[in-house]
Length: 192
Image (cartoon, rainbow, N blue to C red; front, side):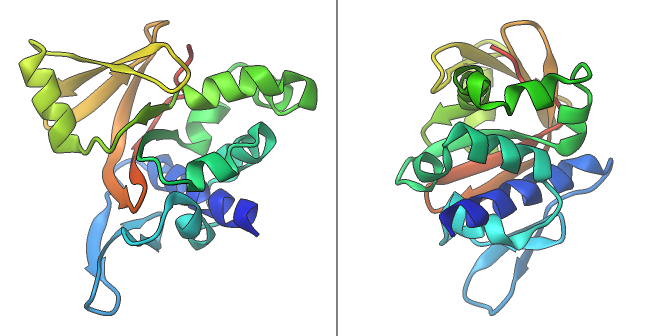
């Protein structure tokens, strides 16, 4: 059950980033909690990443990867985590066969390395990241759970995230707050 919940949440993140011009919107479903709509589903800040997972059917690739990597329990834990969540479209842009290869059981260590490269310890919202970029002279270096670094820069009113290989991902939807962190939907898979 926990795996299904987490998978659904990641699907929400992926779907939201798949459509150019799609933005998160704030809504209050029952008046008691401000939510963000991602991919047509409400993300509740009082729930953790996994508990929000059941809300969308649009992010199958990241869901499959998280399940195959055995990271469901970790990402449903207390954290806090900042997750840069790539979309299905981002995974589809990888060379042919890459995703299928990563999802094979014998490649689990590599898959976990790629997935945890998208996770930074702490709860860093867009304003936190912007402040870090400004105080860093135009860029912020973030140490990932995987151990390598990501570079965040401001791009217009938004943010970009650059991996160690020079791939640049745009934050398509930021500040999807969870009880155990925050998600920023990105349009590219980041590679350590």
